[in-house]
Length: 194
Figure 1 (cartoon, rainbow, N blue to C red):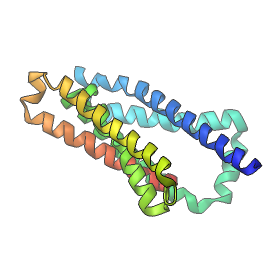
Figure 2 (figure 1 turned 45 degrees about the vertical axis):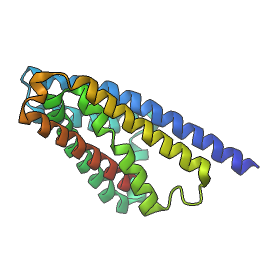
Figure 3 (figure 1 turned 180 degrees about the vertical axis):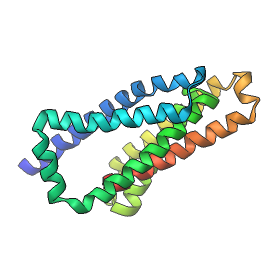
Figure 4 (figure 1 turned 180 degrees about the horizontal axis):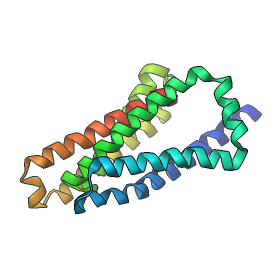
């Protein structure tokens, strides 16, 4: 009974953390609009990557001290390569998002690169056996959520596609491909996270 309660509590905590991360990430993308006023996509991405690096080191060190981080690295050095690989995938995907925003705007690019969730679900099922034996209710939740995301992305893309300057150029196609590429890389980045 305690184990089931613990699993349920951890599941709820995971859902809450996922929603909070999504809201935080959504807000973090707003500065990428600087690309529309002439800043280089690479410069914006470099600034974001530097910010992530600093935040990921300073917050844990402020909470637990520098010794905790070094102990963690000494105990699990074999995981460092996976963390670096995930970071590389994240950085390339992040740069692609800036190009996507420049070419098609945030309202079209954001829903498209959120396909990363669907890619992550696919990898979780394929590589780690997630959802196997989960029952119809679990599958219904996942597929229902995926369907809502896909419909939402299509509705947003259609609603904002009336912008003639973006849709008339070949840059729009490159922007859409950049957003989808970012989604594929971010979804694949979850493999090393796992």
